[in-house]
Amino acid sequence: MEQAIKIGTLVNGNTADSIIPQIVGHGFESFNLTFWQTTGQTDLKELAARLRSLADEHGFVISAISVFGNPLTGEGNNSDTLASWERLIDHAHLFGTDIVSGFTGRITDRPIDESIAKFQQVFGELARRAADKGVRLAFENCDMGGTWERGDWNIAHNPTAWELMFNAVPIDNIGLEWEPCHQMVSLIEPIPQLRKWVDKVFHVHGKDATIAWDIVKEYGVHGPKPFVWHRTPGFGDSNWSDIITILRQHGFKGSIDIEGWHDPVYKDELEMTGQVHALHYLKRCRGGQFVPNPVEGA
Image (cartoon, rainbow, N blue to C red; front, side, top):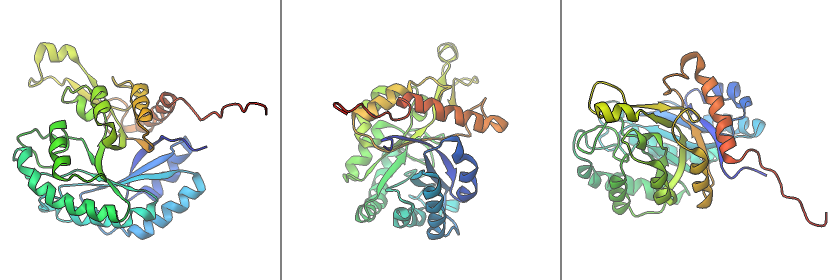
């Protein structure tokens, strides 16, 4: 029996067909393909065929395909971001996934509420395009160094923004690509937030954080001392057993994909050491491998 919640990792879409065969043997059950700002010259149809062949061989799934850029402005290196959203929506079925994810974008260096009208225009159309193809859109909750007042990547990093977004585009196939880390860096408690928003969580990134409360209490959050670090799951502050319990209680059936390359300790030559530790840790938090119940009278 397949696990209702799979544990996997993120891979660069441009190199996925070479990277996945090297790491799938560690036990990754899903892969989230990511592109930065554009899908570029990637032949998505050809890539999907290669990955579906690998998936059939190794028994994994493609959980989501993502592009991270600013589709609301289309300026500079983001000139192809909106078209990339459209291409991923159109090709998602070839990868065997129904989730396309990324940043919302925002009007550069303006308050979040000033981006809502443009968000409504762009993602209203994208959501309808996706709905016609059975695709869901999920917004990563990363602030990318932005605040409510200023930023140039994403508005979907604060629950008040989520309220504005989902009210502006009241379509059931838009939701969140959620992770606790991006809330913890703003000192938001992730567990009660997840309980409130779980029905809008379509995809989960496996990234945690460590908050140095002693530094917060002595120096605050605007001083020279770092007070929070992104962490690979298993090394941070979150209780992933609680996170997975909440997801299960609300019928979540999808993937938790580890977002590596951020941990200050398990990096460089220790990157995959940390990721495989996280893989095993999250599987334990999930309850381990599926074990069938005994059958009475057998």
